[in-house]
Length: 115
Length: 108
Image 1 (cartoon, each protein chain N blue to C red):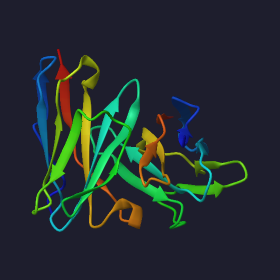
Image 2: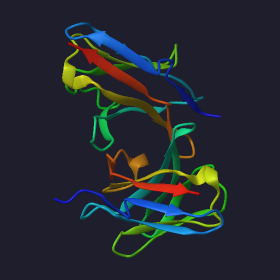
Image 3: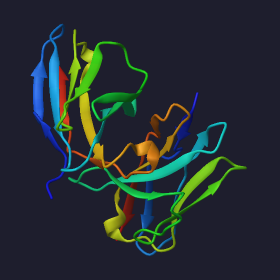
């Protein structure tokens, strides 16, 4: 069974631009969650989607948004990029929501560099 | 606010020695706690969760509500245990809160 797939793996953007990252969950998984990992702040939860609905949201500004499609694939978007948005963005999927006790499986992440 | 702290950024032990990775949390309620591990060049993965009370790869973790701790222990460390370990909890808002991580290095 294929794991969680994230694209692109690496990208460089300029301040002020926007970026869209994509996540394909494990087949059959309906929940997708996103995380930002930086050396300074560590691993921080962004949001979780289940059945196309945002279930939970972390403490991030409105520039960070996401959505989930009917096939459970998810995208996250960051608008008006700032230098501090440079990070590894991880996606994870689970059968149901993680708060229901479902194990989450992580992707390899998308490395975003903002210059 | 809910927080997870891991006081050690780096922990080095010799092979065969006991290892304990510390995790403390601040949370007013009954938390759901986890340990995640990331081996070199591999994805972050679940190691264990407190509700299952299982031992994975020889690791155990006991929830101590009085001390608000969830330390990860293994009696005899192996070189393949070298990795980054993250303690995490699910809080009231059902958000995941991760600790800063501890890098475990098991020396031969």
